[in-house]
Amino acid sequence: MRNTLKAATLESKFPLLSVEHGCIISKDADVTVGFRVELPELYTVTSEEYEAIHSTWVKAMKVLPDYSIVHKQDIFIRESYQPQTDKEDMSFLSRSFERHFNERPYLNHYCYLFLTKTTKERSRTQSNFNTLCRGFIVPKEIKDKEAVTKFIDAVGQFASIMGESGLIRLLQLTDEEITGTDTKAGIIEKYFSLSQTDTTTLQDITLKADEMKIGDNYLCLHTLSDVEDLPGNAETDMRYEKLSTDRSDCRLSFAAPVGLLLPCNHIFNQYVFIDDSAANLQKFEKMAKNMHSLSRYSRSNQINKEWIDEYLNEAHSFGLTSVRCHCNVMAWSDDREELKQIKNEVGSQLALMECKPRHNTTDTPTLFWAGIPGNEADFPAEESFYTFIEQAVCFFSEETNYKNSPSPFGIKMVDRLTGKPLHIDISDLPMKKGIITNRNNTLYFYHFYPVWFCI
Image (cartoon, rainbow, N blue to C red; front, top):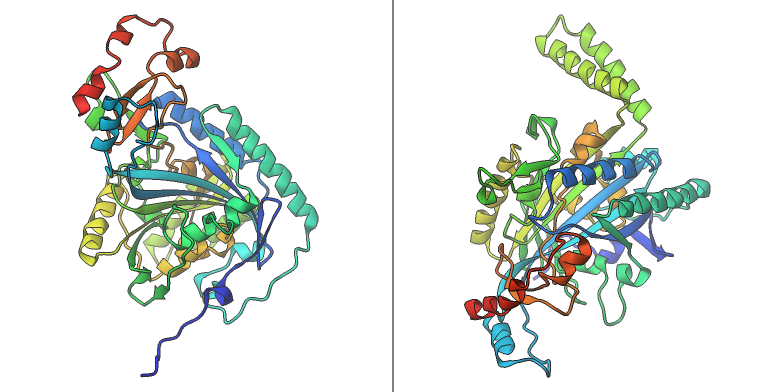
């Protein structure tokens, strides 16, 4: 029987051209620099530190030139704990501890940051001119090489500002980490496979009017692309009631509910589009005049005019930079029934942020395609909303899961969120970081007790 479905190869639709000197070059002459981001651990950041992280992001974004895109991509994958029982010097208790947690499921977090330099024409691209909608893609030549050089210098300043904060660390991705090798997959191949393991197999992508499928996994997408869906106030951090008391206060980032607190396979994409701020404000000035002239025909035009005036007053009074922003949560599952439950979980977590959950089925393929590392300029412009940098950064997730202490001395404990075993130094490392100033000898007496309790 003849197949009547329209099919195309990934090669014909692939939007990237090459990777050179750590930069991803798209076929539309966009340049992208990628970083691996190291965030602070969950439940360890105070409100003052969240404000410091927020101000650092704002300062770093202001050094980027016009028509730059900041794309922060947080990937959360369900994985199983693999015990380390092959060490020769392991005791019976240590080996039993590792076997007890064999294949314990937990949510692993991978964070990447992509900085893209595009053009004015590309920044206005809509979904109907996405690379998925074109019959063929003709590679373009980079004409303004001086602008690319300035962008690379600005990226260096961006990374330096973020590193000086002492709370976030950026590690630039190499060519091999982006493209992969013969034995190891790169970040682009991992993105297409919805995995972060060393997979070397790409799966078929099915695009339909009501669903998108990659291999055996069905995707669902929730977007924050309209001002009406946003909360009245956006803050740098929020109080986590489950671990807070009257005397203690546990703080999380404003976007933490769709981060580690969402227990399913998902990708949280955060975009900030830095356009020409002066041109944006001038456009709003003309729009306000048009709304004022049409106010006699509809009261809503007068209300919209007042909102635009308030936006312009904020921008001119405090010298704020007008940008566009977009956030989306892309989750997946190989079971349709489980996918329904995941949709409800994502919606409820967005509601905790006082956002209006909007399940988007129409633009799932184009938003997935724009999330390809290096293809951020292919983002549909109609899916973004205007705001300021300070408000846009509030939707960044600013924490990651617990990590093992680098010190060889420590005890075995477990992650309070997922139950994953961890090696924690509660004596030497806190002294080096300045968390404690005095070590009580009773710490050594209790070193082995958590092992007995966990078996």
